[in-house]
Image (tube, rainbow, N blue to C red; front, side, top):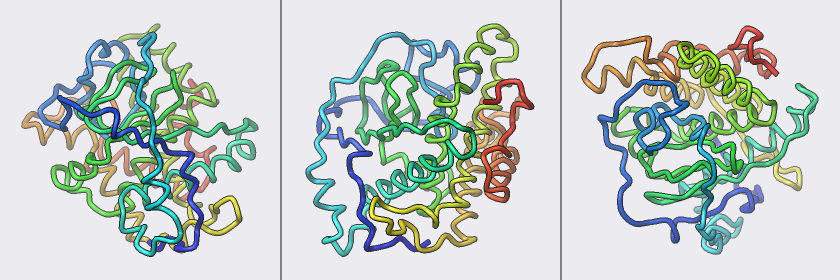
Length: 310
């Protein structure tokens, strides 16, 4: 993967609230119980074991909430400016570029593919714990998307856990994480997330199944973006990525495998119980990322077989 050193990054797409959200709690400790539908897990922050698996839609049924955190992007603006020759050695700046690229892609692709306008969602970098439109969360939930306030949330120390505990290292593994979360934002804009929420409430026995389909579609959308990453540009038309290699794609696939439900269950010391899957198996997650990447088309991401498709 080669990033364009000359690209102008749009820091308005990220809010750095790490200076106002710290204190107590946090961490990515396993074991956290896996299983149960995500519908009502939700009066606690213990959600699917570090959200198992790279994120999800947090707090579907929570009401209220909201963040009092105040963003301060001054340091981010300085470190990620083109005047800093080492900016892409900085995790913050690389992830800012990933956010810019994913949103640049969907800004064009969503109306072209689905006939819907794309509305940008801000990613919030937080530390340890934060209040959100979906309720309070801490680092233990992993990266997530909150449909109530249209933010993606991530404690960037999650990537250390992803690499060290789950063996999914590499910079493009990080890009996959964010592209997956923005896949949930796309689902929210298309109404898919709301349809799934209705299905999960009306058919509680099938709630985990619907959750898996939603997560696999977000993986597929991540693959679609990866296919087109080198086509994305900054606001002046400069490319954001110069190259994305097969090795980069493999890093994303390795991350998808590492956070499959079966892999997580095994790591927690138990047997594999498909009835408790909420994100899909390692093989399924790799399959659907590959489907998105190989096709390059959001229309190929039909994990629901029409039941909750846009």
